[in-house]
Length: 252
Image (cartoon, rainbow, N blue to C red; front, side, top):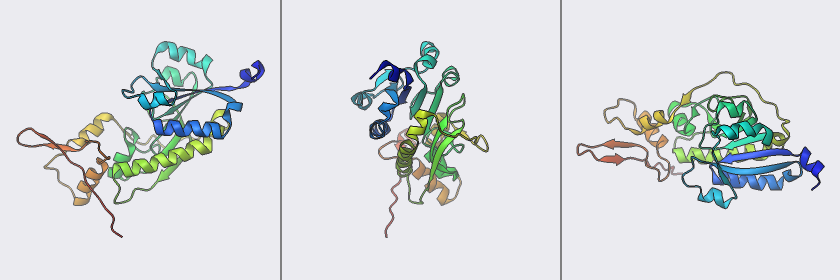
């Protein structure tokens, strides 16, 4: 590769803690021959406590909050893509270089942690959003998004898998325009709502005296049922923490 070609190539950094989506991204990068117009680095965040699968994909660790990294990013990269990164990008970083986030939620609804959980409960839209990052969490101009449906028999995991599927669609359909920065981004009609990790943890503590419809109770349990994860629980009279999940089955 000539020096002239290297100098005109876009420089892309992908920061992800999701092996499935990172592998898909890498395959699409190769399938769409993007090495002809850009170079790419793959990293996982320093918050990732189990990086083995990311290491197998050729990723190395990075702390996006380090001041030195934020100061150098503008000169080193033209674009930074966050794919389920466990770190929140600091303001200094998103203000200095174009940062794009692939978010497993339908902005501006239920921004923040585990959007599918809150969408099952509050009936707000769920899907995936590709957006330019700003100093607020899961906020900024929207490049593309896709909504998915929530069925009455869905648990959190069911909806999440559907969201992952459309996230792959967004990667495939928008990768070239992202790298070339030829996309059109639009502003949300409003700022929507935000749910923190504290909000999620509060949901997990079941109130055995809660008053509500049976539908509301089922929705809460299916929202907190995510495969083998232990989320919903109550504490019995012997101070034992008892975890609860729900099994829903459609019989045709």
